[in-house]
Length: 205
Image 1 (cartoon, one colour):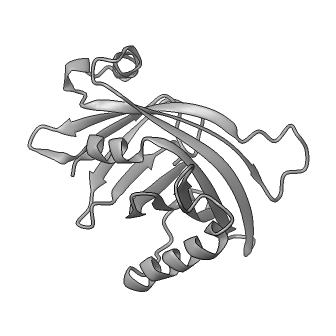
Image 2: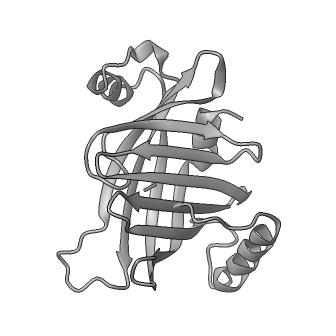
């Protein structure tokens, strides 16, 4: 599997249930969101635009994805706290290994600025995104439990010492798991995966 194949498997609408741990304060916060993923061909105008934004030759891109989301978090205190947005991500694979390379974004996971990071497909065919910002770094890992269930772990480490870690269970909207049974089925599937692969603090629209 390569980066674009992972994007293609992720295409569609997802319902995400998220727990974020604020490690410095020893507190956890829950949230929910709906995520829409659409793949973009290598010659799509938005892919070309992002390449030019990062001064990368567009012909080197394998394609990309347009991701949009709308959600809420438990600590929201007003309608002004907005968890709605979108971003374009572009895959630029290494010439000698399409399972890793550069990931270009018009906005980052931890900061709302254009950012270029690294991606890799690990030995379990999970997508790992590594991004360095001016004041922090983030690591995200996406893996499929099944074709209709994804798990996402992520960490954000701020250079001042504060860190957050998140775990998301995402079910495909319209699948058999997207009904009243998901509250009982999805956590059990998550436990099955975590029993095999110990969760490490790693925090990704």
